[in-house]
Length: 158
Image (cartoon, rainbow, N blue to C red):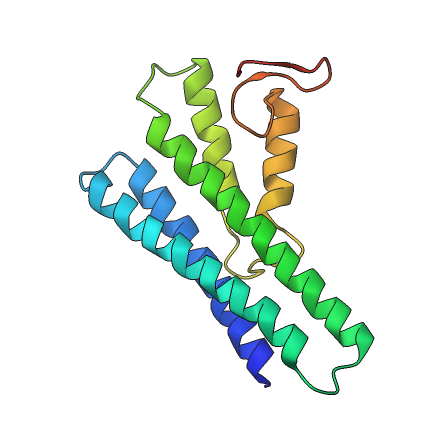
C-alpha cells in the first residue's frame, strides 16, 4: 500500500470517528461540552489530513494524470463528507430539545440519518453528502439548515 492509500484510509477512519462522536453527543447523554470539544479537534485534524492528501498528489513524482485525477476525486469526496459532518456538528450545537412530532424533532431525525455511516461500506459510494442531499430534498430544507423551500428559493435565513 502506498502512502496516499494509507493516509486516505486514515482520513476515512477519522470521518467515521467524527460521525460516531456526533451521534454520541446528540444522544442526550451528559458530557455534551466535552464531546463537542473532541469533535472540534477531530474536525480540525481531518482538515489537516485532507490538506496533506491534496499536497501529496501534487508532489508525487511520475504520477500518471489519470491516477492524479482519481486521487483528487477521492479527496474531494472526503472534503464533501467533512462539510456534511461540520454542518451536522453545528446544527447539533444550535438545536434544543423539542416535543416529538415537531419540526425540530424531525430535522434532528434527519441529522441522525446523516450520521448513520455504514461501517461495512465506509465512506465509499454511500457518501454522507448523498445522504444529506436526499434528507434535505425530502424535508424541503435548504442545505444551510435555515429551512424554507429549495424550489421557490424561499429560505428562513438572512
